[in-house]
Length: 175
Image 1 (cartoon, rainbow, N blue to C red):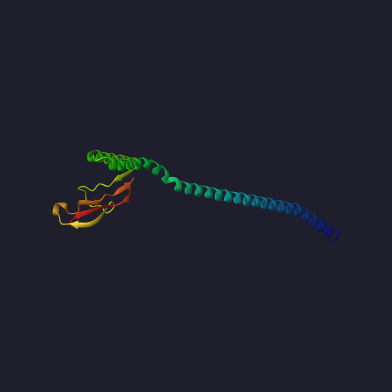
Image 2 (image 1 turned 135 degrees about the vertical axis):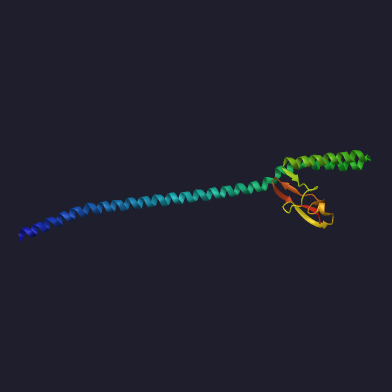
């Protein structure tokens, strides 16, 4: 019996010795995992802050761009205003109608060139099929079978900025 007790004590001691390193290993693993979790939480927090800063910075840049976007266009239009002022001054000082007409025509050409440079183009309306993507029908006019569905007259020009319609052409359509 004594041998059995000695044997049980030896087994218990060996089990305790093998459990102790396993427990220490588990504690070390848990500590490693807790450290990794803390590291990932810190990394996540930093990335969220970095993204928030990026979002704020880009929103600020967008607001600044929107506030100053028209500045360049208006600056380029100022010479046209100067030309109109010179034309109105010339109207008060001269009776030469032909010179005034020529001056206004030159200003118009300059303005059309400016619009062209900014990729603003008039929508074609002469003898084209009515297109609801570009035209707005003001009225219809009985013009015969050959003119049915075609633009007969344009009451107000339409314009596109690139491929986007910024003002529909107001037209009379054949019926």
